[in-house]
Image (cartoon, rainbow, N blue to C red; front, side, top):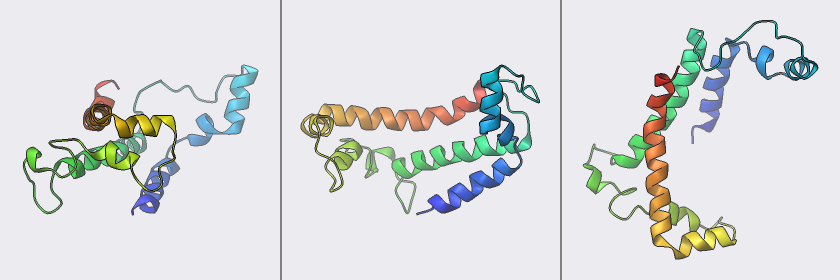
Length: 139
């Protein structure tokens, strides 16, 4: 899978961002002591091309995941022909019944309640499909 490539791409974008001024232990200790940061940052605002690139990279990941679940692997099939979603929304059901699933009451509840697993699959899909565009609306 492409997790290594993804981490590398995110790190490249982070090279051009002032991560140490915001996420380092020094920055945490400065904030804890009540000292002002070296530079003021605006909350929820894209300030540079690198920040835009990082946000776009994450949005592309979610958009790609949404497309992979709605369209056939080899062609753009209709939504009702997708193996992952329609008509019975089996994704969470498959995950709850997998070999690596721990036996606990939550997994048992998901296994025994098809409506719950269908709701969880649909809500997860809707979040993946709608949240990336919303990242750009509120900046």
